Length: 146
Figure 1 (cartoon, one colour):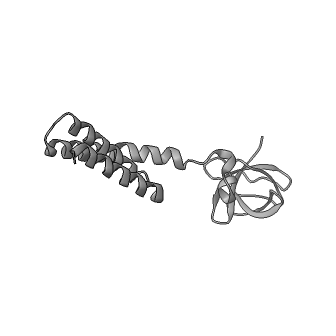
Figure 2: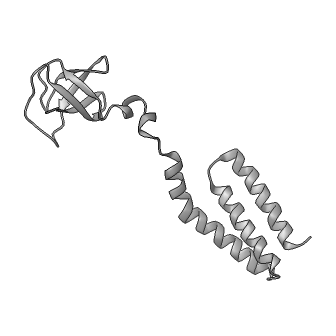
Figure 3: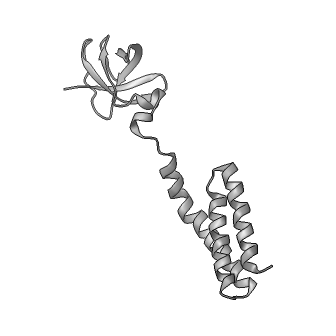
């Protein structure tokens, strides 16, 4: 059995494992194995094809995988749920809201709220329209809509 066939079998096994894990590690090992198969087809010694397969796999895992995972795991804005979907949402102050405390109506629910100190520290009266900047525990950090 030629070296290229062995590398092709290794690539097929790695792709089979990747289908079960969906982690991109074994997919990049398969790419390295295919690179080793290509080198083996040129008639290079076994140690060269092993070196190429390992180098391509390692480069893929170290350089390509983190970038690919960041892009694959990024949720579109419309797909955010729970508290991740609240920044940018508008609500109404039910009580005076300061940097210490307050209550607001947000998407039909009553929330504890306080002003976001990075934006403003001037208290706002009840009835003021607010926008959520971030969530801190069970408290919405907000600022008034001008």
